[in-house]
Length: 149
Image (cartoon, rainbow, N blue to C red; front, side, top):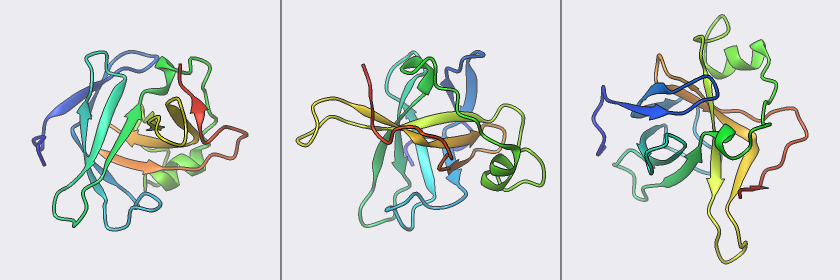
């Protein structure tokens, strides 16, 4: 990984900036990306709202995703994440670490769409204390591709 283990990245949240480990370990593979559970979280800009998520080297095809702090683009986004879902996603007996935060996967504009979108239905839950992340599908009426901007 290009980012050192033990370093942190600043992530902006509605309650203030948080330090998140620069290497995230997914509790389960992301859909469609088998064999990848370790990713480097790298800031794209200085505001702490937009990041790249790069798979650890070693695979035949490295992957880079884009993720964002959702409140910067969707100020009213406040999904209900039940304690059972949180505990299951974070692999804990209780509710996970206090301060678990959300990131959303961003789909860049391309040939099939003219603007960037974000997946609000399936955010990444991140436990900053353990560097653990998990994508969860919410039981809410939220879009897979909400337009950004």
